[in-house]
Image (tube, rainbow, N blue to C red; front, top):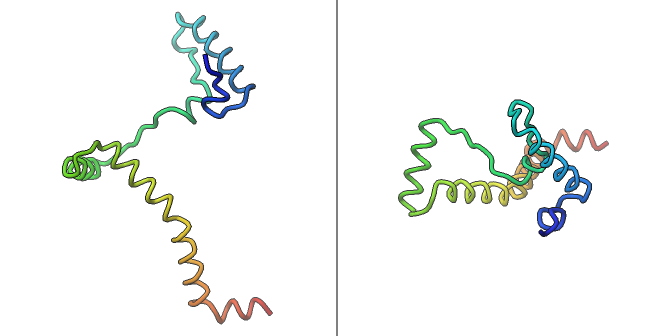
Amino acid sequence: MAHLSKKWGITQAEEKKSLILRHVLTCLELVPHLRVIPQWYHFLMAMTLRLSEKQSAALKKVAENEGVSMHEIALTAIDEYISKRQLRLKDAISRIAVEDKELLDRLAK
């Protein structure tokens, strides 16, 4: 079995905790209300995306038109948003530098 620390990029201490926790969870199989979700789950597993009915319908329509899954459309949108963040930040700073030039000059003195 490949070590989780190498495969998933977690520390060996986190891997050990995860293995211990898995053992404990196995032992607690008869007591479901005591189950605990391992910390690595929150970093490596799926998430739930709650959409309004309108958002869901629009996403479904786009996915059908493009012949891909709703999941793929959402991932593409997230990737585009993240990749454009630096550009948006640079544009905002440039806009503020122009719009508030006088104020910035006074503050610099």
